[in-house]
Length: 283
Image (tube, rainbow, N blue to C red; front, side, top):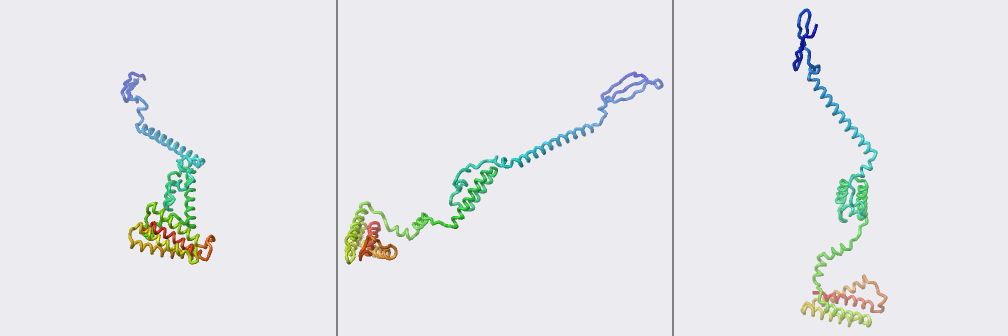
C-alpha cells in the first residue's frame, strides 16, 4: 500500500491509499485531535477554573477574618482606645464635664451620660471620665436630698415677691438727700439726749418732741394735714408698741445702759428709729 494523494478540508482531511488488490481507498482522518473533542469539555474546564478562583478568594477572606479576630482578642484594650477621645476629659467640674447645669434633673443627667457614652464609647479613658462625673453628680444630689440646705437668696427673693411685702414697700418712696440728712440729724439728737439725760419719769419730753418732729416732717413732705395726722399718729403708736414688744421678747438687756429707766430708754430709741423711717420714707 502506498500513499497516492492527500486532500484537506477545514474540518477533515481525506487520505488516499493505494491497495494492491482493491485499488485506491479514501479514508477520512480528523484534521486535528482537539477539533474532535466536544465543546462541552471547554465549558467544564471554564467552570472548574471559576470554582477554584471563588474557593481561593473565600479562603483568603476567612484567613484575614481569623487574623483580625486574633488581633482583637490579643489587643482588645488597644483597639478600644483607638476611638475618638472625649474633649472635656480633664475638666474637673462634673457638671461642666457632662455639659449640664447645676439645676439639671436626674433625667437630664442620665440623658447626658447616655449620649456621651454612645458617642465616645470606643475610648476607654473617656468612658471612665464620663462615668466618674455621672456618679459624682448622682451622689451629690443624693446628699443634698438627705441634708437639704436653706437657700438664703431664694428665701429673700420669695419674701420680696410676696404680695404683703410688695404692698408695704409700695407705700414708701425715697425723698431727696437733703431731706434725709435733715430728719436723720433731728432723731439722732433726740436719741443722744435720751441716753445722756434720762429722768426718773423716763424720756417723756424726748418722746413728745419726736412725735412733733414726725408730724412736721410728714407735713413738710406730703403737704396734707389729714394724711399728716393719720400717718403721724399711726406711726407713733405702731413704733411704741413694736419697741415694747422687742424689748420684752427679743432684745436682751444691754449692760451699757443701766438704771431704773433703762427699759424705757431702749424702747424710746427703737421708737425713734421707726419714727424716722415713717417721717422720711412714708408716702
